[in-house]
Image (cartoon, rainbow, N blue to C red; front, side, top):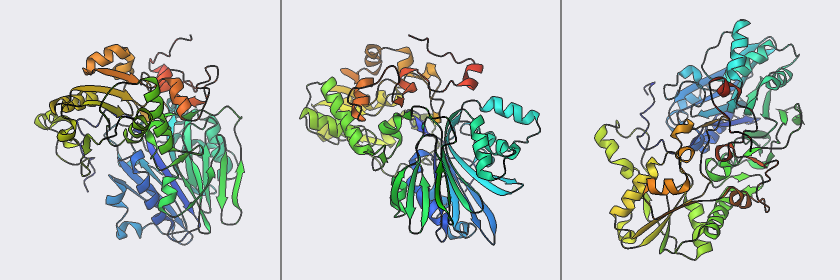
Length: 489
């Protein structure tokens, strides 16, 4: 495979990209094979590149990093034979910090460091909001950085720590870090999992045979036949060894949890469990709430596949309007299809989605999608539906307007590129040229995820900064770069 990433699609940039998936296994034969399977199930969290580090008592640490999909790299026997041992961790990435789109192989995690008391590898999901300041300080003190990734700061902070063992050094390092971090790390004998004190990004624990697994999501435990044990709690650190099993402690000051609400809306796979709730059921509930909040007379409820599907089903069930697959997705649309020349760009979404003409013609259609980011894809889909002869097009969006960038590990455009940052709902409706456009309310979203009384304004139960502009961790680096926070109300 070439070391260049396939070109991003001209119409692939209208969804928020989750930045990473992490997975680790201890206490199984050929742990790296399990990790490869787990990463395959987490591919939706990052499609740019992947890496695995394993440890074998005789062969020591080994690593493999590759661009592209897990299935194209970590299914090769030749590659997997280089990763022996009963302990391994892995990472799939979509770059947030670091060079966008021109990722160097050195930016691909897990990162490895050799310390006085042995080696350690680390894979990180999230974003460190004070990484620039930490990096400057570390470089001034003599650290030599290999990558442009914010996650590498953790390895350097661990190297400088005076603590006795690696888990203690990691604790020391993570106390200096601000932002969002779910981390899976390994030493020669231990698998370590940590969630930041706010628990912004997910991390779960599973039991696989006599061994253990850590994963971003439960769907990746299913693929290896592991039993879901529990979520790692916000601010919790687990150190897992074959000798002592799972040892848990809380190195950070306890704070109210601020889990990312967009995990429920879009990032997580619908077959995962989050906070004891089925993601699929939550999304169906969002659709039901939307139907209650913003009803409209129509003939069909159609999802924008695939992310709008569960919410569209919920909308249909609540409203009594029939559900229909008015848009069909081409399943074989890889990222490497064709160089996106101007003529291909003008084909717009048609390479990926096609309208089911016979079904749509003459009908009043409700289109349900998970979000509107830039609005480019929404416009193209609306044009396709009208070209197919729809009488009316009504958009219903399963999240509130995305008006603020995320600094906790999601690739969000600059604020001026977000449609909802510059336009009201009415202006967006006119811009998209649809008969009606309604977003779920923030309270409605909170009700759908199980908060019966809606959002607690004084202390929101989730991180919803992309909708509200209220950031639970001050994005120090971005403010230094000129980002202006929302004025207090």
